[in-house]
Image (cartoon, rainbow over all chains, first blue to last red; front, top):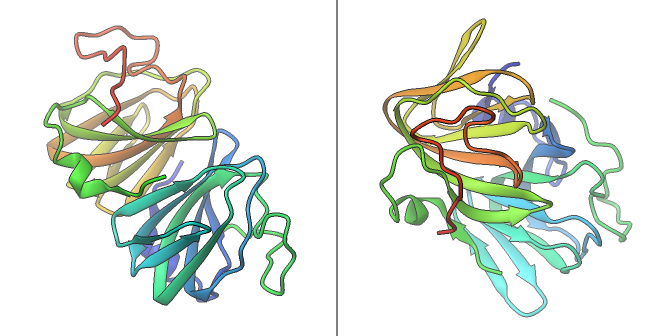
Amino acid sequence: MEKVNLSEKFNLFKELWTPKIVGELNGQYVKLAKTKGEFVWHKHDTEDEFFLVVNGTLTIKLRDKDIHLDPGEFLIVPKGVEHKPVSENEAHVLVFEPKSTKHTGDVESEITVKKFDWI
Amino acid sequence: MEKVNLSEKFNLFKELWTPKIVGELNGQYVKLAKTKGEFVWHKHDTEDEFFLVVNGTLTIKLRDKDIHLDPGEFLIVPKGVEHKPVSENEAHVLVFEPKSTKHTGDVESEITVKKFDWI
């Protein structure tokens, strides 16, 4: 049982839109992601997702509105809701979601990650 | 679906060791807690708990060691593991745990909260 320092973990990788696993509890993963540019529109039919911005800013586009997240702000995207994360500049984000969650939901894209790595 | 600003939520309450619910996903609650002084030794037989320090410092005492958490650091305490959170000065903590989690596990104490409030 070891603590996790978010800054140290973010320093271990540079890839964008490639969440890394840093913790596991109750069938969920804690992941860290670096975001910049546009992700794809997608949804998760059975999993809610939690996004907490640690550094930078992240916009979660929904079909009916955009939600802008600054550091220290989080959004929970309920299952079934289409969303598209976008970051104008690089942002660092903590994600909390069930282990079963697919990266881009039912959409297959060039950026789809099929196996998440632990760091 | 609204974003949550952690600072704004922490400004809404002053009670120590009285976690407030600020989000719900996948059968889990996101809670915010203010800690100062000593909590009680306890464990949760079936729930893992996630503690992320937002401000201040929190020490999670375990039976065999102490783990000190600074802002931006988290610890996952697995189910069944006895622990005792302690803060010399006030700390602000984000907690992630199943909705079924009892405040002080199988221990009843003066500080036990039986019903958690949403803020």
